[in-house]
Each structure stands twice: as C-alpha cells, then as structure tokens.
Amino acid sequence: MEEFVLQAIQDEYPDEFAWCYGCGRLNEHGHHFRTGWHGEDTITIYKPKQEHIAIPGYVYGGLIASFIDCHGTGSASLALHRKNGHEVGAGVEPPRFVTASLTVDFIKPTPQNVPLKAIGKVTEIHPKKWKVATEVFAGDTMCARGEVVAVVMPANFAKND
Image (cartoon, rainbow, N blue to C red; front, side):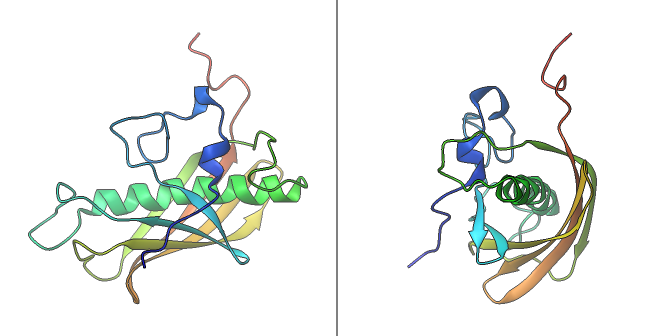
C-alpha cells in the first residue's frame, strides 16, 4: 500500500495563496506537494512523473530542489500553526511562509518510478525566520538533503501594486 498525507497544510491555504507550482492545490500544472505531520517530524510524499527525468532512470535535480523547497515552507507553516494552538483541519487559516534561502545536497542519484518521501525537522525558530532540515528518500535510500530558511510572508506580499 502506498503512503499519502491525509491532512496537509497546503489544503488550508486560502485560494489566493494556493497557486505555487510546487505545492499549490489550484495550479492545474503544478506538482501538488502536500505536507503533514509524521509524529514530531513533517512528511511530504510524491511520485515523480516520467517527464521529471534527468537521464534515463533518474529524476531531475530541479524537481528534488522544488520538493525540498515546498516541504520546508510547508513544514514551517505546520510548526507555527501548531505553536499557535491549531492543527490542520481545525478550520483556522495557517500562517504562510516564503523561501529566503534553499540549500540542497545531492547524496545519491534519485531513481525514477519510486515514490519520494521528504522528512523534515524544524531546527531553528526566530520570530520571523524558521530553519527546516529535510532528507529525501527513495525507498530506504537517502538521495538528497537540504535546508530551507523560511520567513513569514509579509502582509503586502500578495498585492500586485
């Protein structure tokens, strides 16, 4: 049986913030990454498509970077939402984060046709800046790891003025 994230923070984002190519549920062309709790860690599961190829049999590294990026901002949102006394599904709009910094280390080639699992831990918390460490697995093999510095999205960020 394939794993999936039952309650994802991205499901709670208001429509005006649900368009991200990586994790936006309203972007019909996007990946639709979904991040939830897995004990005290966070988890995102995704099966790359055939077009996410680097060379035959392996996943394009840009997809892995996007996976870590959205997992990191989703993890920060989950953690601050919980810190504020809320859980996913409670009907309370969660905080939104944007990426200030992304680092990715590719450990082993990532095989095609295998579901990927990103496991994250919030490693540092400041009032506006959160660090999330993520490891990406294909099966039991860690293929990549990264860190996202996520910042609370400014109130005027969504305005197109």
